[in-house]
Length: 127
Image 1 (cartoon, one colour):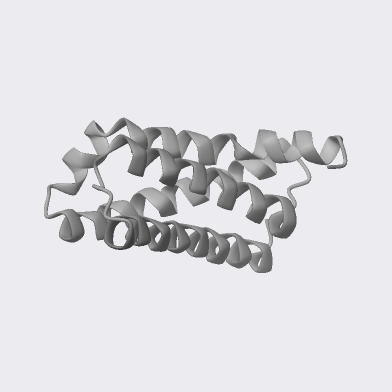
Image 2 (image 1 turned 90 degrees about the vertical axis):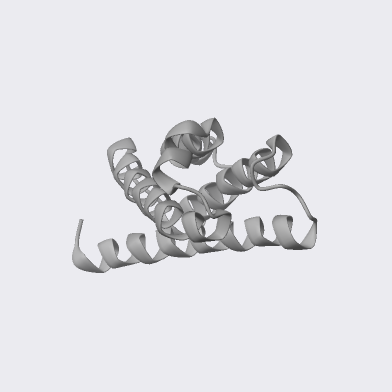
């Protein structure tokens, strides 16, 4: 990866994660959903999939599965790092324990990691 591409990947990963946090904030404060409820996690997981897919499909455009997985791995690390940094003060809980115990966070990370497969399948079918 060249430097310009790496900066693009990092910036887009940060933007996708921050948009996910904005959606989470709207669900929590606007809709009044409990941030540890199933529906909150489900909506955030679906939003993560849609955001990662659209960003990867239209902006990143990985040529190979390896390039797509590299991008997804970077985005997953960014997502988990922001979760560790931001969720503790927001939820007033031990963040590492929360990350290790909540299945929705791991499913969300897995979905981000599997997005390149969906993107490359969609590209191969010219959707």
